[in-house]
Length: 433
Ligand SMILES: [Zn+2]
Image (cartoon, rainbow, N blue to C red; front, side):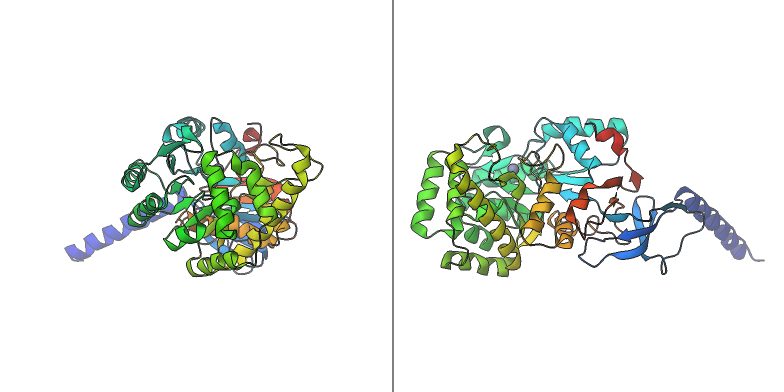
């Protein structure tokens, strides 16, 4: 035996020992006999098997084709469905970090706050660290970038011109923002400056429009739109659009009733709407309707304390918002889900579930609503290679349900187990938050 061979044999022994240790450390976990809804929109896999090693999914498929690794821990999930962890792209943390953990117990394993100072996440991050849990995954945008007389002063930075807008945008990115959000009083040139920063930094730019024309902003490169009401002004003839714009410029409160009136009369097939659809077909922006926050029902007490005689306008305006949500998705907008934290007709921590139900009421299939909250949401985070689907290589973020949400979307409420990064969450604890 030459000296070289001895060394090479030694190396082989060391490599074998290391890989044996590695296998022992990452004992695989197998979710067995489970109905798999992978988030892509594909039909469920009956009697499926998901293999997880460490933080990641390593195999997904039918039990007939995916083997069980030697020494794996197996969980029999017969009668259960598994979906990717839900992603809420419009969650305002405000002063309630516990709500994020309650939403986690409801299957929301990641969220984006579309406009808030970083300081507001400190307490939630502290709680996550103290409890030693791997989630929820937090995506921030920094404060809204708004114009003068901002809609939500405490949550905003004010840019008086394009240069100030650009500098605010750069500062938020430097502080870790994973997206930026334009607010509706920002003038067009300033909004475009923010979009340019997002393009340069390779993060998405989203917006609450209402006073900005969605057609112009999307054509200028805006990646996402928050709230179905952001399309309202684009549906009106120029003269009426300007009247609405001036009313809201005078008082931010003018939009509270005004947008329902606007939608109640909106023409979804008129020339303005057609011009909007043409831009959507070309640019395919992400679209977060946040229907649940606008939901109004006949006979229900009005959440804003408005006069009862306005109820028919609210109800018909909301019906038209649902129609437009369906229509813009058919025209090319990529639908995602934002729960909007607290909404009139959902319990605490249940806003994303209500949003998904409203999407189905608007004409989407349950599988489309699930894709919006998972695969497409991850794409809007620019994290498709990490999150949002049940496929090999992605993070093991998932929700086990007792029901079958592809048949009845309300089965999204039947949460049995929640996993983030390969670890089960104590949902009993966080349901009390
Ligand atoms: Zn919001």
